[in-house]
Image 1: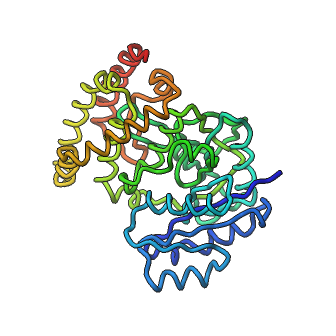
Image 2: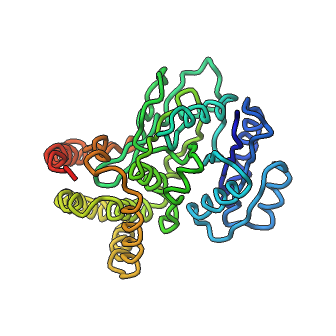
Length: 356
């Protein structure tokens, strides 16, 4: 028996004018029972014009207005409303995508395949102007990977599309297209609103691991993503700050102590990078955040929640964490030939000592 699905999509400023129509049309073509799909558009940084546009272009969606632009809080707003409306499966999706007709059916099938699966991610292909069968298909993400120093990045980026069998377990699901069971969401508590944006999906995936859930790739659930790297790196402050929040929130103290030397060396490297690339003020702002007692109060609350969730040891959680930083769009020779070999060797050694 099919379950009711709530699909949460965030609009931000003029995002809908640029992306909504293609997204809407592909949602209307889904093979999953239309009566069991409810779309929630969270109009983040809402204006009178944006509300009017959304109501006109997507009248069957439920539109919820917010003012502050907090992406994580916007998702939580949508998730709470969907659960209140009786949705048993919750989907977080981007608006800058085109969904194939079986996207939702296959995503639901994947997350429902096993009681241990808490979440699943679609196969994400890069949008190349259209999704014609005659064009070579290129991968955006086959699931995401966690680096032991808190970075998160896509698996398979820019590689030719390929057939994938089964439901392979992944590090965490991208917020571009993920599905999560209601009971798993209630267990882990949704998104950490302190993150604001970026690393929100890393944090959610890490909490699912702590609670003993698997996250898998749903390779038959396919979408095309209008990915834009320049737009993705605009908020460097949150990207850098939030990886530290994840590290300090979810690792056990002993694990933090083991990775601290690598963290310090990388931090020095980030300082040099910040100076040479003219974002030293961002670097200082990140570190100022961790000098504030209020920040550590929030982190300690995260750690208490993580202890309550924990069903799995750190040694089992980090077994799939990687040692090399893979910024696919940035070819930095210092990172490639010096930084990554050092980080890799260090991780290979210290991981053997994580037995808790």
